Length: 529
Ligand SMILES: *Cc1c(COP(=O)(O)O)cnc(C)c1O
Image (cartoon, rainbow, N blue to C red; front, side):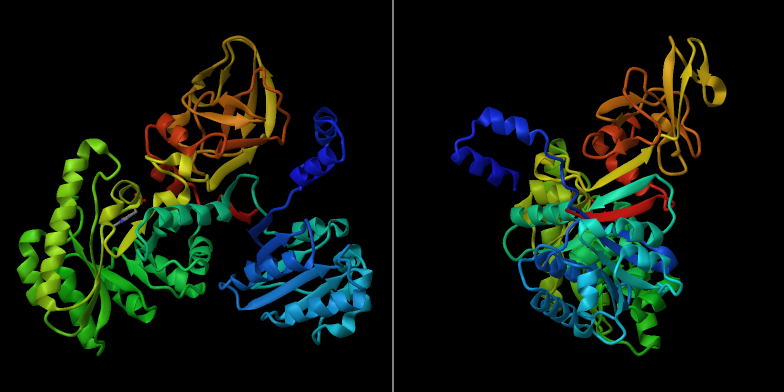
């Protein structure tokens, strides 16, 4: 929009200097849609910044993707400046809403209220946002997805505040658009028709289980993979219906696996036998499984020398092999490329042999994120995309978008005198008079203790501030001397301005560990631009 305005003014004869001076006064418009946890186990889709028919239709789509709730509610304000006569406008709105599976409609504003007869039975109307908030018989909200969509002047942020789950001010923000962009980037690198299995193990690398799975499902991901059966059960209970592979199927979980239509990884003769017996006892046949081959990672899997025995063991109809796969140990390290090539060759040999002898057709896959970027010609039928989806690449970081930001805000600021000490064991020492900010986040939230005593830096108002003293369980102190900071200002632990790779390096670890260690007590906020 700003560029259109610029071009219009320029072609109308205004000088670039003049236009630059007035454009400086433009305020950025907050346009993003947020998905957050609400009271009483609700999910709140907060889209309170603009309202028109197109954005309403998009928002209804997002509402319908919230498969974790059966019940769907929309709270909608008057739509301003549509250019349509009110009667026609609200007939269109009503038709849009009727076309979706909405259970409850709440309209706020004089115009929408005046057209209440166009809406479903039982719809509620209020002329002002205040009326809705102060009404004696407030509608109750429980276990449902609620779309809040209002024109700016209706101040729906007041409703959002009431409906939101109470949270600490430390949050992990997850940019769902960025996630989808990263997914598309990896797809673009791969040969056409290569399937993608997205790794959503460990709470989607810390980014949240079913929310991420939901977006991937909507974008036609072929497969999902989790580490344990209960992670798969959570996905199923929240409306995820794409196939799910379970990498560590434990004996006690076989029941959950078949009950919830999950597909186990079979990596040893012990589990092959156990699971076959279980299927036999339960009268199940042709159950989908994935065979894991160890080609050099030496973690889980059948070894090449066991191939013939494996083929013999597969000769009954209880198991249906849907895929045969292996895992690369060092696809991200050029120094190990010879080893990687050896793994790929071994995988091809073993999977070819299984194919020939059993006559079964199955998919083959070996590439992880780094493998996709560095060995795309060995994609076989499917790849297993993990860390790259979440915005981290050791190869083409420039192609990826940052997905998560871990943020908090300043709880208290104090001045300390030269020689004072800060925090436990008096490990932080003020050299000269310093200004110190205390943050309500600590190692229990996932701020590594290894970042203490100057090793880690966080971003405050565009400046880097280093951690001073030891990181505490729920608090961390940073040195903000010379930086303009006030209490309540936002602090970015990692995110766009402070890449998770840099934080991982300071903590002496890898981004995977930083991401997956963010505690569940840190609220996740999902948004789309
Ligand atoms: C986690 C995992 C992946 C994904 O690895 P990334 O490096 O995150 O892409 C792929 N395959 C298996 C077996 C895994 O455990």
